[in-house]
Amino acid sequence: MRILERIKNLAILWKKKNIHIFVIAGISLFIGLYLLMLTPLKKTIDLKREEWRNLEIRLIAGRMKLDTYLRLNKSEIDAELEELKRRLPSEGPTSAILEELTKRGKELNIEFISITPKPVTIPRQSPAATSKLKCKILPIEIKMKATYRNLAEYLNILENLERNFATVSSFQIRKDEKIFPKLNVNLLIYTYIVEDEGGQE
Image (cartoon, rainbow, N blue to C red; front, side, top):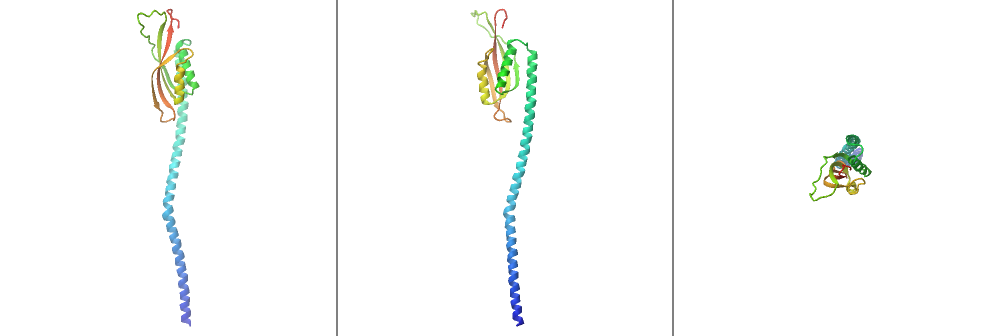
């Protein structure tokens, strides 16, 4: 009898052990699958988070540089314009032309880098010309930043200046890689000053 009871007890213990073994094996399998499948995914997420943080830091640094550049650039341009105004006669066609070119550009939110008058030239006239008026050409080099639309409007304005008229001699356009959709523009325009025989403009 006792032997049978012992055998039964051993069978019950064996079943309990088997249940424990199955439970432990199931938990181990679950943990193994979790680690196998989710660890690479967690690493990918961590890498993406790190990339995102780096991009955010670069974006903030870029914005700060851009703000500083625009503030410095504006003050430099204003200082250069003041210097030009001081060097040129206060009343005269040259200063009036420069003032109008600057004013009309600012109305279109164009950023002027520099406006440089070149030496005045006198075009050759044919010997048969009998006009008492003399024409002088004042070349002006303009470096600026503008959008496509603002540039087109500014070129249209050049044909319809209030105090004078101008023609575009040459221009170069290059896309600004730092500030989309701005363009770096170099213009050489000819403005015309007409004088009578007495030198009155």
